[in-house]
Image 1: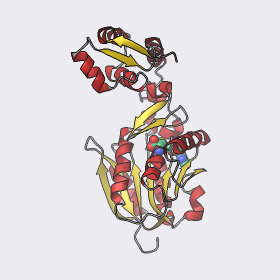
Image 2: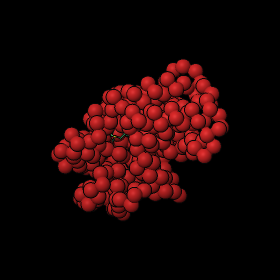
Image 3: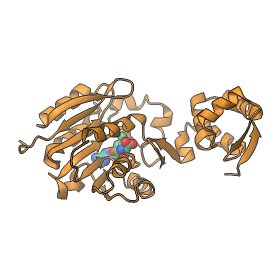
Length: 296
Ligand SMILES: C[S@@+](CC[C@H](N)C(=O)[O-])C[C@H]1O[C@@H](n2cnc3c(N)ncnc32)[C@H](O)[C@@H]1O
């Protein structure tokens, strides 16, 4: 990228109008201006009222135009083009190796931390870690507690390592390649908190996803089999055996999977089962706990 540039507000705003005439969503363009250009949303709003102000961008307009053009022409996610994504209070490295962390998953992490407040957690796990977003958040919240981030994809794990090293350098985290609980067998029965955002999109919805998602995010991170519940079934099936007595599992799911997800948790012999809502008020999370008695 070329160097920073100072501009008059009015010329920046007319350049922005021209870029938006090329297509795309205003919200995405302003996100790009913020993350790559360094012009925050609040600074942009101020500029709209006071266009005589000058602004300093971190990169040239030409660089931003190029990124916007790639996004429009090839439906490449802006996060991939910029290589970064704000998530919770963090800025994560992102790439085509893993799902771009979503806002719902910020809520999942908050819910996990609320759920275990006051509990003594000796070990946590993030199943299907992808970019490592959940693992980074858990490790930062509990740096002295050992944690395990699992993924089947070696490329996702490499990205998770980058994020964990950069953002949770003090944490005692471990990365494992393999299927869900399998790599954690040495700790089965001793994991107090498990957070999992599995792939849950039903097969027939995959083709209809926005091309920005469908063509650029890993299929392994999206596809949940015919009914979208395949990964949730596998994760729930191993939960009672792997959780410590009294340990919690929290799972993110699709907007219409609350009832079957809760039912799977019930069938697996877990207790304190409940649903939780996302920011739009939709049940998007299933929570359950292993009781203190042995698993049946
Ligand atoms: C929906 S993404 C979640 C990524 C990340 N945790 C997040 O919330 O942004 C699901 C992740 O599960 C991983 N995955 C899919 N099948 C798996 C399996 N059988 N065992 C372990 N991980 C798996 C995918 O590679 C992907 O990284």
